[in-house]
Image (cartoon, rainbow, N blue to C red; front, side, top):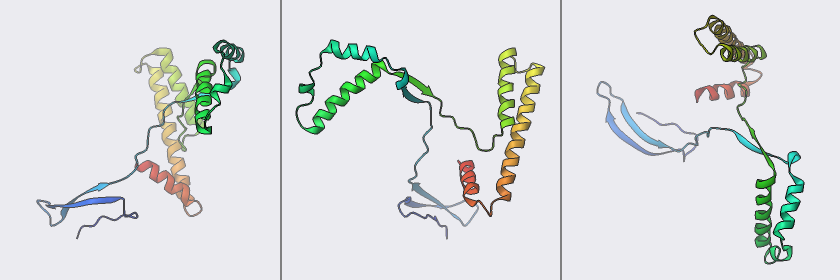
Length: 177
């Protein structure tokens, strides 16, 4: 008997038996799994209100001659939507936008490994040739240090599995994806 195990009853549906394998008595099972996919985290935008053009915003407000009594009449929801639209237009025009790179450091990357990877990138920028001896040497050293850092991190996780199971299983789950 072939089984599909699930801790959540709504996770698996439309289970179908597609017949036997050609050389086995096991059956081929087809099913739909409803799981959430991780979305890629890219760059995020952040509004830098410290660098906002306050004088330009004041001038814009005086030029458009906004009648606040007409903006703030009606129901509370309508007033809020009109007020919010005015604020968002001013924000988009006068507030500086910063782009934040959301790449987070992997947990096993040591300081020394990060430093050597940056050095490798710098050497490549200098020579612009991956076959240059300096580039090869920097790449080799960085690669060895990254492997060593990963090995040390995984060894420490394995040693502390009794004390810190949460970190171990979080790392293993991340490696599975």
